[in-house]
Length: 430
Ligand code: PA5
Image 1 (cartoon, rainbow, N blue to C red):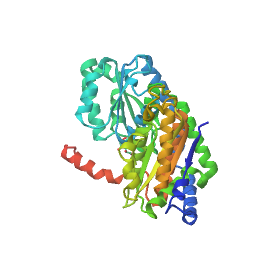
Image 2: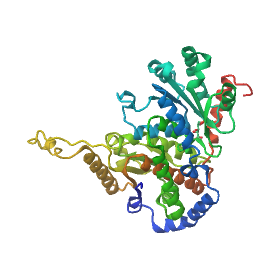
Image 3: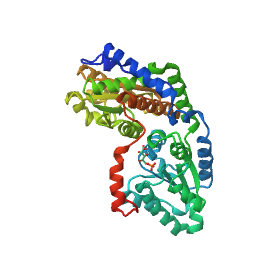
Image 4: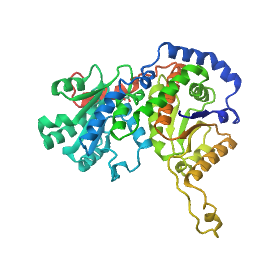
């Protein structure tokens, strides 16, 4: 069982924090939001309890691994990239691509259209043993299609028109889009993204599950953690702390003027998790002049970069710390220089202990400085805990959408630049 806890004490106890009356006043709206949520559950809520998407993801991943692929390029952007990147960063070895033992093929992410990245990927992959997974729900995102076309050109040159197709997977809408058309034409393997699950909510579809399985992560454990969250939200409704979190962050923004939400994990492997969350919160809620600004930081590194601002800068932020109680790896700090008081005191402790002590110290210092902060605690960092947390934050974001009275599942604001790009790049009809 995953043990994930949410502590909002320091949003209440801090000077000028949220009081009972404000929470009570919002209570009815929160109840309505959760009722509406369960009357018409968003597509992402059914993902943890079905093998519909994990089975084909695992099967194809096994094939890629068994064929001895040396390289796997994941092409996608936004919701089609940030979840898989977060999982990879959080759960795989940080030098995964350099490990001598075979954890799976080396993994490369082609997100942006910056040729610096794609050219660099093409510099290092062994093309005849490379697989490419093109991930786009719409099947028409310019960045993704362009990256695919360049990689395709290289693969065709290396393998020939016939064989290149065997190295390509399209992860795309299960019913429509240009990639479906190409797949029908070329017989490309495909994995489905369900039509009712939008990009930033799709990490537990093949978008996240397939690359995770290719690198040997336990996708069943990810889903198990997420399913536990679904059950607990169903049991506790508005009392589930992830749901309560929607009310806290909403009130911090609209009643207290704290419109910046800083997610600060005290764990390097969660830095890209924060980036995943930033997109989830920003793209879901930033509409019609509403929404708060999410920002990612990492402890302790950003204690030496941003915490000065959080402690003494404008009173416009809420700091959300993520702590890992039992870090998967730890290192003892050996005894040395015990006669030097500014050095020797560290001996006999461990690196994880220092990290968690600094986490507690920052929380206490923020509270004493009148800076509201909340904490999410994970008993440890593994697939099950991450699955739980991702599901919980997706629920929280959807409920926050109701409180802000915006549609959390669209992104009309990104359309305008797309249309202009299409027109300038000569796409017919634009
Ligand atoms: O969350 C979203 O819906 C977006 O960020 C999309 O994931 C992003 O624009 C990429 O879209 P697509 O998967 O259609 O290429």
